[in-house]
Amino acid sequence: MAGKIIDGKKHAATIRAEVKAQGKDCKLAVILVGDDPASIVYINMKKKACEEVGFDFELFKLPETAAQSEVNALIDKLNNDDKITGILVQQPFPAHLNKNEILTRLNPKKDVDCLHPYNVGLAMSGQGSLLPCTPAGCITLLKREGIEIAGKHAVVVGRSDIVGKPLALMLLAENATVTICHSRTKNLAEECLRADILVAAVGIPKLITADMVKENAVVIDVGVNRQGGKVCGDVDFVVLVKALYMTPVPGGVGPMTVATLMENCLKAKALQS
Ligand code: NAD
Image (cartoon, rainbow, N blue to C red; front, side):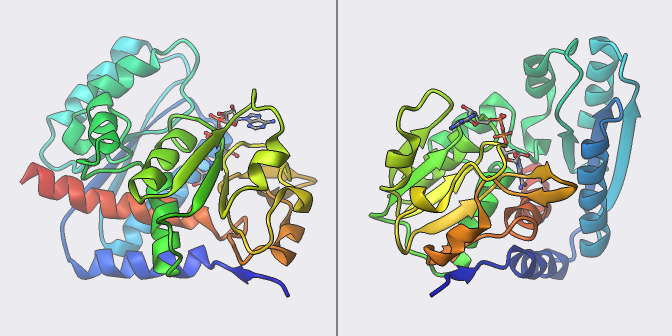
């Protein structure tokens, strides 16, 4: 029997309604350097979510050739603007910019994607209020579906700073036993087969196939890929036949990332008051 599809859109809509119900004045500032088409799609989703929950939104665009000093000056301006609750610098940045310099320049209390090393440290030690949006969205999905994490063997495929690594630590904080796999992992299939909770955050279409998934596993697909003009995840959707629960792509983790960003704006507002 096929597993249950976790409806990320539904959960995200509930979270947005909860955020809206708080009736707080927040303003999200997004900085975009260049005009990467995928970034523009993601920014528009964030703008739409802000409109829906009643937050102000402003996009600050800089040209692809913007110097580090220009980006720094814009961050300083937004850091010092009391009307701005949250600042998000859309990644990827052009290669000539220093990512660490950008992230450490953000006011940690306005760092709504939890990328400043101070916030990363707080999150790692379990003291963070602001948590990175995509991993936090995955944990929220599991909890809102009533899926037990404690004592489960979670396997996270991918070790990026924005998804895999923080998600692995957050699963650990929820008392899962965690394995992290990456591009140099030997026998990926063997590792995945041990997972009660399997997370794919790689960026390779259909990397995870049915023979890599244990019967009745919970499968969280973070990947967003384009194949033959269609959006697909890192997990072959036929895996649903074996899974107990599975997130679809699109409509799974993606909407939760944006909803969590709205929650983080509220948390940032509280930190600043
Ligand atoms: P990344 O490129 O920074 O990291 C990819 C990770 O996959 C690396 O740690 C690498 O070691 C690992 N990897 C690469 N090849 C592998 C292989 N053959 N086997 C096992 N591991 C391998 O990517 P990212 O930023 O973490 O994003 C991962 C995916 O998640 C992408 O498709 C991205 O678009 C998507 N994403 C989705 C959301 C969302 O809200 N849904 C948010 C962020 C990222």
